[in-house]
Length: 556
Image (tube, rainbow, N blue to C red; front, side, top):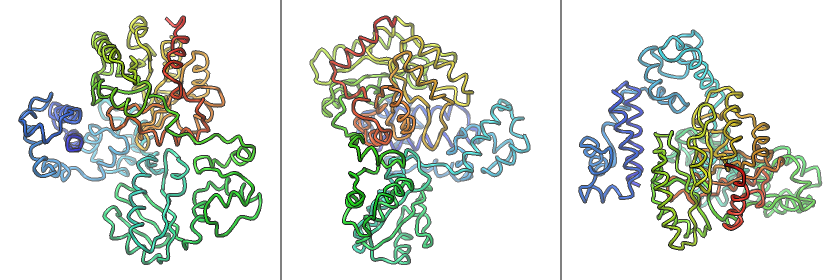
């Protein structure tokens, strides 16, 4: 973990230096160093012991000294010094989506230190006068302010991790017999404003508030209504009931309201059920898992035996979007293949970035061909997990593809992606997609809306037109399971299923630890009403290859 922690600290330093207007070379050096130390498969301790730290790309004498300080002390004085120079509220602007460079300019040139300052400057049209900003940049900042005022949502996976940590601490108290996450998190919603915990306890609110106030992860505890604000800003609302009333309260707090009302209308429900299943039994309905409590048609589907079975990892045959160290991934092809074998996968599609995404180590045609040769050599050894030759293909500003069609024809999988153009109007975004998808070169469209949960709004994608394009050109849409993406989301997946659009459930893994992390992706897919047959990752290698070859017919 030292490599990752040091890399993150260097990234923080780069952000702070950029805010303070330091020269771009120094900022870039910390960013390069961060990428290099994070990508290194050799632990920091070993690099230092063998005096090999300076051999890493981008690690000069200054960063080597910085790494030694971190290794000896677990911190960097430079970070603390920079944090003292940058107002905390100014850092908040960067977490809202303002780039560090722009946040620094706003501070130095307009005296902006926080969100109210920014809002006032926008109203007075001061921001558009800054060089390089103009009306377009001003409008983007207005969107940032509006979103912040509405309250930044928290990504579901991060909120669940924080709420789970609090739950474990609460269960250390012998007076708390039961504690479970409820609300929208339990239903698997991708973004949440608050988290909910239900406690079965004999403790009073006053006693609980006293305990909560002393926890290191809690920044504020309130007795009325009972809840906490965790460090990081997540609000956790607590519902306390006697242990015997726990399961009725858990069901009620899980919601949603329409689901509760629909079930309650079917008959008298027990006041003190021994488990949630007893509530559904009393209503004459088969048990409905939290992920499928939509407040729509789930009760009638369950009663008719037509509610889809919740998705589990055992249906998964392989990942179709994985990065290696040929681009911005951390691990080698051999390491990825070995991990695929451990997971029991039949295939992994290696989809490194294409050439125009230089910041992510995009592959030139020559490097792509060299990587493909290495894949062929590894597959020739007879692994049970076959590596597929793929690419995450950048879709250009006018919808152009990053490689000629004859180069793409050499690949097994082409995963198209938009990484630029946020803030473009819908018509321009859709024009790019129409142009790219009409080539029939793209098999899967990655993270179709481009959103980053809690950090970046989605591209202006017309989902109805996207689904039509997917049908017309036989394109599979991705559910990217990366915890900060979960894209497509459940609502879009439900619509895609209704349109008959196949889905690829991919991790977009850049390191071994991310391979196999499907939990939240499976949650979102289940919430979206998907079944195993809707996911192409449930196909065997042989059936997948047949599907790919069938689609390739006439493509080029």
